[in-house]
Length: 230
Image (cartoon, rainbow, N blue to C red; front, side, top):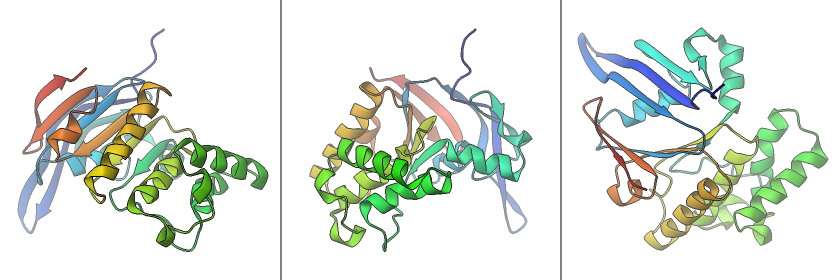
């Protein structure tokens, strides 16, 4: 029996009300992501990609249609089940969203602590992850003591802490310089190619989008084109 896609959307729609005027942010989006895929969702501001990210991450509910994660219809879940589902998704944001008072290791340990992992195990896991992203010697440094690239590496390690079904990335290189961005993209590609991590990345940058295996182009809330990169 074939495994269900990691993510699948069916007729996904989202309408917001701007005063009394309906605004269609998503207009019947259909796509799926299989295990080990690296999909980039490319589009300008206002294309609907951020709204789609919120749907895939179970952070918002569609007006119509379905979001299926590992075969489970997100709309059928209660609040506690949704919270558990979000733990199976690794989120990486443009602005890192690290806890300033915690060290790099403390930031990576945090989701493990929330998941109830004991202190010794979460310390070991955090140190392994930080080593794997090239921060073996920076574990005790707080975010303010790290460069932008190092902070994004911490954020990626944190996203991997609970062995998520997939990584959901929102402009992961948008707040770092071009040289560091290349290093971060190299790390992301290694996670996908060598470790089999499934990645969905949102971006407005065509060069960044071309680093994935597939590009899904969005405009005005709809998919207008899909391209296989490799």
